[in-house]
Image (tube, rainbow, N blue to C red):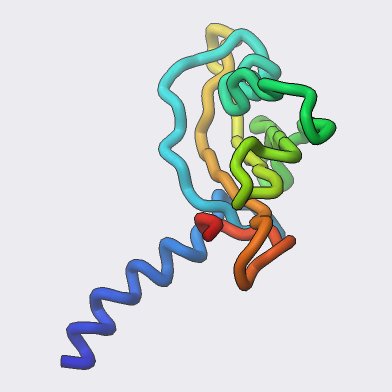
Length: 133
């Protein structure tokens, strides 16, 4: 009985610790990368955050960073952070995408992850790959 339970919980535990790669990358919840291609990395950022901010309430901020992937400089790492989110359980969200440029000069998302900073619960104020309570 215990071994069956362990077989069921190990994949769940591993998926909770999923990361999108990189040497010291923080933990992100794996997301299926988009199949679309984009003219520029900023177009990827726009696709990730949608119409953020929808309002000026609570002083919305967006931070964006773009740098070469440490172990493969042919790829770029795009990190977009939005704070606050219009969900009272989530203080902030951060997307991490690994981008590659094709022969047609268009950009595609190779890896995608999301992490959140919760507003309440046991992980209050900490980034993590979990869904906030």
